[in-house]
Image (cartoon, rainbow, N blue to C red):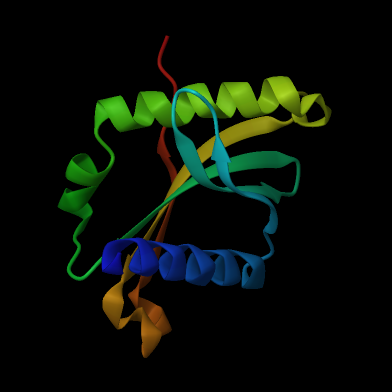
Length: 123
């Protein structure tokens, strides 16, 4: 339960951080039979699918553990499903970002790392 609460708190912090950076959050916890995307946002003419990782200690090396190829595939498939339902976004560019949140972010907003275009769909 504590892990779920930390995850929700991290997602809220990430959403606030992104909104302060000019993003418009259009969905939270977008689900499909493939998985879930934590946040879906608009940045200019780009729709951004965002995975939020809330960890007590993180490094850039942690990305490969937190966002495995399987997890990336589930996010990509969920993004495709989202776009099939919300066709109004189909003409936009698409990007997949990751936001890392340290548990220290409660007191230090510098503990939020936003990785733009953290991964892409490969054919």
